[in-house]
Image 1 (cartoon, helix red, strand yellow):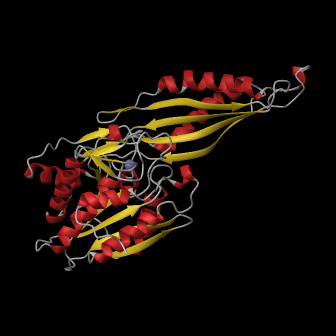
Image 2 (image 1 turned 135 degrees about the vertical axis):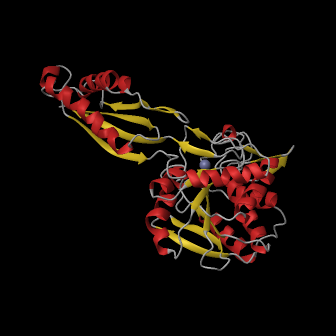
Image 3 (image 1 turned 60 degrees about the vertical axis):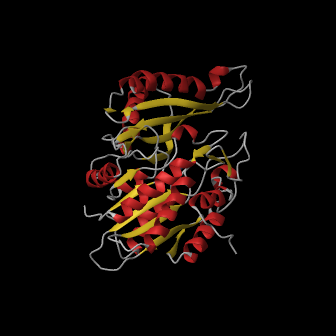
Length: 390
Ligand SMILES: [Zn+2]
């Protein structure tokens, strides 16, 4: 039996009290399930409909909905991820949701259980109101911090299983309740060189994968990274860096394997799928001059950028709501990634807006200013009660 929840602050405290450190970090399987179950029973106790949407090997995304009837009513979707980054090294108790001086402390208090709590609290109030122009749903997704598998499965599989399609999705992340309409994406991958091992007393018998990699890195830095020019007015410049290197076995063996790990930040209007082909051209040029070079690219992870194109009407809707409430409504962009790009790439308009400051996300003393939580309940509630006719 859940203890009774009398305020959004209590709801957030209960959510922070459930450890949902991402399973890729904690090693715990189905890391978000205890929270998903908790939200499910809480939503049901408030008369909201719930659907568990399974995600292979991960548990389930939780859909909470309020169907107001009337086939013409549009669907407005809200989204908040349930997982958090790790709690190691935190200087506060990570899972108590303690309140001090108008702030709630704990892992996820800011990123992004505050969004989820405010969305659910606003939906609870909306379901009881007599002004219901929209059908409204919230999807609580899993694993945003590492692989985005929750949001990906939702757009790839779950959306098609529903008998409705959202007019747009409001993605909850810490933005101080300012609308974010664009963000960068990223591509992460590995480049491997392969040599031939030999005893170091006769290096000529081997081929050093490390020496090959030195040439590869020089070529990438001079002929690829230095030539990156793409910029976006809201999210800045395209970036690429080589950030991890592994190579060699022991000091008396010519190394036969070397790997580097790269991180490329992709701005909206760039195609993330074109990153590796462009680097391949640089490698191919190098192969022409280095007869023994054996190099390949592997283990690619792509998280696309969020392009504002396609979400203009939703952005206008959000701006109008903020204007009506006499709140700042200047739309902006950020360099970090969110689930919004997963939705927008699948053709679902998306805008990111949520309580708290990204400066407090992922920190050793993560906290949320509670006035932001209250503001989020009001703003999300206003969105729910404005006809989403776009
Ligand atoms: Zn987040």
